[in-house]
Amino acid sequence: MIVSAKTDIGMKRSTNQDSFSYGQLENGAVTWAVVCDGMGGMAAGNVASQSAVEVIAGALEQNLSPKSSASFVRNLLKTSIESANTRVYDMALENEEMRGMGTTVVAVVIIKGIAYFAHAGDSRAYHYFDNQLVQITTDHSIVQTLVEKGQLTEDEAKNHPNKNIITRALGVASYIDIDFEECEVSAGDIVLLCTDGLTNCIDDELMKLTCSDNDFDSLAERQVELANQNGGNDNITIVAVKI
Image 1 (tube, rainbow, N blue to C red):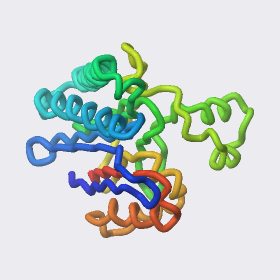
Image 2 (image 1 turned 90 degrees about the vertical axis):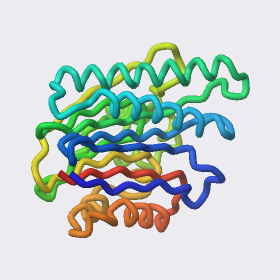
Image 3 (image 1 turned 60 degrees about the horizontal axis):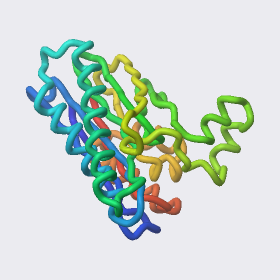
Image 4 (image 1 turned 30 degrees about the vertical axis):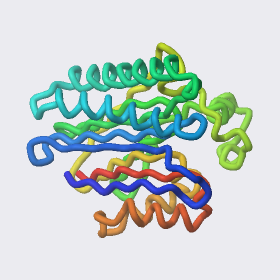
């Protein structure tokens, strides 16, 4: 497995509140990645996303192995995100300037032909295979809830003024509700994690087109460039893993 990753401040923001990390074990037998999009005034969003990534990345790096079972991987994703939630929540309680800070989270562990995902918020995971692009995660947002209730169409949701209001985030409460997904992956597939700075500026068709190119090494960089060309309204982060 090989990785293409990049984060960018975008065209409109003064700071980058996105954070990410990834790693591989045993020459790529296991690959993991995590992406977080912080929220909170000034530096607080940076602190939330960086702290969450540090905790989750540390747990995955220290505990995963090619022998890890499916149940172990699922539980490790759960406990690492819960630990990150506690860290960010406690920091916010202890520092008045950080009150209300939080972050989205999307993480993946790819092992033995299965990709295991965990997420909260509106950062997303995608699976590209056989010239198809499938969104694995479902946004935890007000607009997504309205779509599910039939009160908004998918097209209306794309430009809704409240599209960036999320209903779940890491660090804003003592407990975090996490969604879990998994899918089979094969040689040539791509698993992609990203913040909404990408998906708000690049539609699925354009994302699929970039995934279909043979130049995987520059995939993240090209997607960042396209997002910035289309407005770059937010920080942009991509971590893509090619099986």
